[in-house]
Length: 532
Image 1 (cartoon, rainbow, N blue to C red):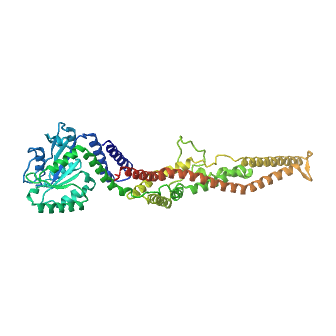
Image 2 (cartoon, rainbow, N blue to C red):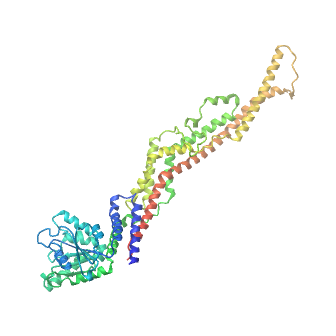
């Protein structure tokens, strides 16, 4: 028995893990029966295993109360022809232990005791009539049918083929064949031929209900064939002490069969990273990555010209705003612990917002397409779960990205130094020419000046400095443009890396988590499945 208990506990644990994994993704009412079974199994295993709860269930007039009284040896449950006959459940406990905790759990108030060594440990319950005209009686019968360890269905020759009995009750116990017994009571009213015909027809009906090989035999409390066979079967059941485990095992099996369609598909597609590429492009559009990368290119040119341009004219650049400055970008990025100022990129345009919405739906559809319903809906909900957080997250990602524009390249400094060297040379030459002109006007002798060929050195410095500086600025322009293009591509790459992280954290990870939960829930349900 210990191995059977351990096996049942393992199956219940598998069902519990399934509910835990599937709970956040599936409708709660779909998992409510599984939760009830888990709670019921825990409660029943914690109660007395020395007692076996057997319920006598039947329609009005079937004689189940008479069987209850006959087995107990005295009139404990009311027997009457009026409807309803049995309104409240009655319980009789055989043996010295009264099973109070078990009966409290069953919530049965009418309790009696009986002595029969062969039936010690039996808790026999006379249920209210399941076809009672009183709704409360039917509800009480249905409640106890979910809790008892073994059910004896008491049928009578007139109503044993009742459609309600078979469709709403017996047919629902296909997973509980081990704890189901059917007796055709009041057999004393039939002759041998009639009794045999009824038993054959009853067997056919039970087979149609899925209750193959369920014990089915005749009983009577006033004549042949009596209750000896039923008493013997109850004695064997009580002695084996397996009915409670078989009942719970059947409960788990029934729930697993009901839940299996929810994880019928293997679901092997959820780790395909290529699915996210369209999402990354849509996120980049919504975050303004193309605009920022173009602004970074123009900003590179703007800053390069301020460092390498012709000093005579490049001061004009100081009056032009930095293209990245307009977006509140380009500064040295703050650390992850420091607050970051919002950019002025602005919200996504309607077309970009629509493209992002379509991309989110595409991610949900493609990640969930290999999962069994209704998991694809859960995947789509996960893909959209952080949609409201995306704009701020994208803005922060762009603001924190190091665009690499706060550093001054060494070649800018070299070109800038040459420009100033040329302008200083031009200034020296200009100063000498001015001085020479002033001396000429004052008719003073000119000081000697070195010459290069037939041209004065200072004249050459003046003209050469201006021309060289202007020529250097012109030659630097294509180099700046090429470098700006490379910088734009590098900025775009860095921004896309940041965008991918946002997409992974807020979109991909939630949908992948659903896929993982699906796979683990599927394995958990396989652990809970009964192997026959």
